[in-house]
Image 1: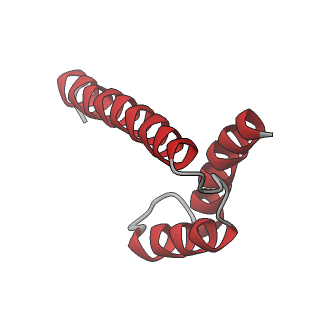
Image 2: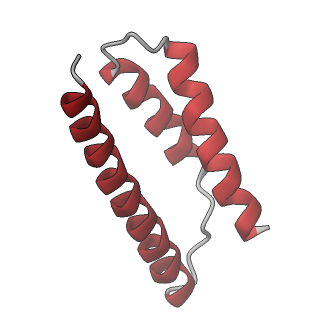
Length: 80
């Protein structure tokens, strides 16, 4: 992989990171405005399962799960 291709991929990840941040904040604001609990363990389980199924590697299924459980853990700490 060339340096140029690596930088392009990093740019795509940075854009996705910003989009995820905006969406998490939007979901939290919506749930707070409508009195809906922010935490939904069933949704977390479904999300992890879908991401593991969608994973084409080389990151392992366990790696995918750990990555997203870490992200979700940070979000949940903000709520509690």
